[in-house]
Amino acid sequence: MGKEWYASPVNTSSKWADSVIIYGENIYTHITNNILPQAFNNYKSTLSVANELALKTQRSLNFIIENPRAITKNTIESATYSLTEAGRLSAEIAFELQIRTFEIIQLLLEQPLETLESAYMSFLTHLLNGYF
Image 1: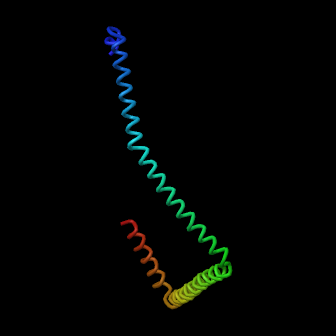
Image 2: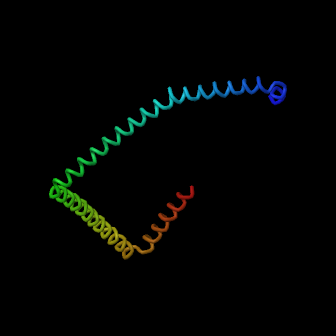
Image 3: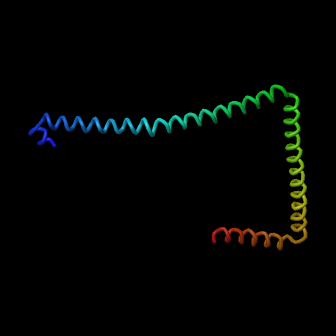
């Protein structure tokens, strides 16, 4: 291309200028006809979703502001129920643990060697199962 320009600089420069103009027009047409309409549609869609979320948020906040007693009551009831359930489950687990501990102590008192040997074999089995 360099030799062509040295041989005929005016004609070669004109061809290059025409190529650049055509390329620029193609890019401009593509941006104007394809990219901008798509971007505008995406913008409108995003704006619509954002407006919907803003309205939902506003409605939620208005409900909270207009009904503070109901919100507080429901929150306290929910927290109380969750804490009651957690306490009940903890009591059940503690009771079960107490029973199992008593059973282990009874076995150790009645059959100390057999209980320790059984526990050793159980631990060894779990250990070997973990390796294989």
